[in-house]
Length: 69
Image 1 (tube, rainbow, N blue to C red):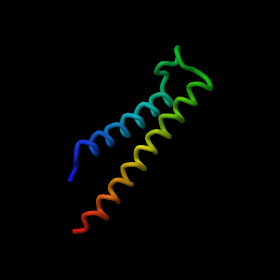
Image 2: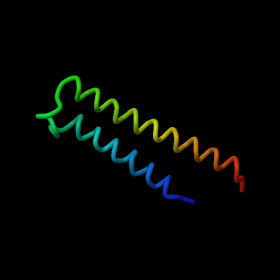
Image 3: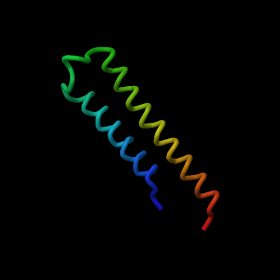
Image 4: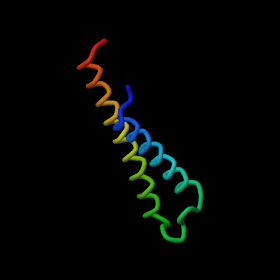
């Protein structure tokens, strides 16, 4: 069963990946953020999405171990 934390986490992961994609492959905010800082920001977005995904999987496995059906 999906609870609000799961839905919120999935939303955050999707938004981080979408924003990283647009920052990497379009000229979105290129006048403010360019060069190495832009690449670092993209890496941070991808790492954060991966971290949230890891925490989601960890919580799901913990829930499955507590409630075997």
